[in-house]
Image (cartoon, rainbow, N blue to C red; front, side):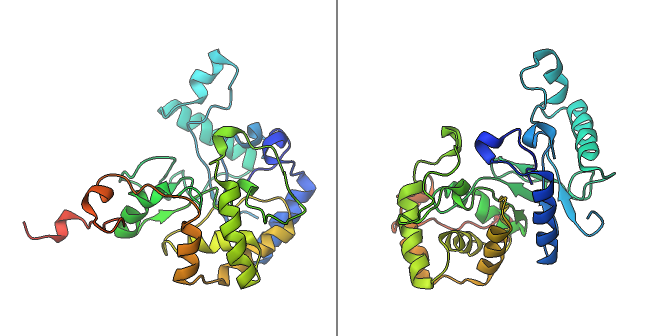
Length: 272
């Protein structure tokens, strides 16, 4: 949840009034999970019935070398100061996923020792399918990906809203146009928005996958909720995934004669 205007060049503005409107609509639609971080919009950012998570290790003092040593990294001091800062900004005395009811990790490989993972995943960036998604399915853990809607860059080729917000190169996958075309073809057959197809594609990857969706408009929020009932056919998924050549990598490419990823279960399930 990114509220404010400090990152308006990348994320767009979300004023306090608009934020309340969006949150009220989210709550009315049954929403109860909010993702935050201590540095979103440089710290500009209904409690008992909401599930709130936050993150640390990202410095809130970027540009201040002397101070940022205490406000970044994974050390205990950074943890305590970041959590304290997030609690003050959120005007709450606890967060559900951090201090410490559930442990999660963000932007990491496929380790263990936590209950959830937060990483970038979409129809144009499927790297998590190699190890992370299979491991999370196996362990019954939650995956909360961001970027599922392409960072706002999935658009129908004939949409009048071309261009959109300025997204820096590190946040672009470079496949937005190609993937938009295949998503649009499926969307037109299903008579739904292109973003609905992108969301449905991610949701069908795993029952433990819970996308983190951004947005600043109530109508976009409602469209995302409506898309939860959309089911894609295997042919739809195959068409979408032909939008770019996904490298399944080693050992899948080495071990598979079909070009598909192999499924490996925990060794504890085998007789040795």
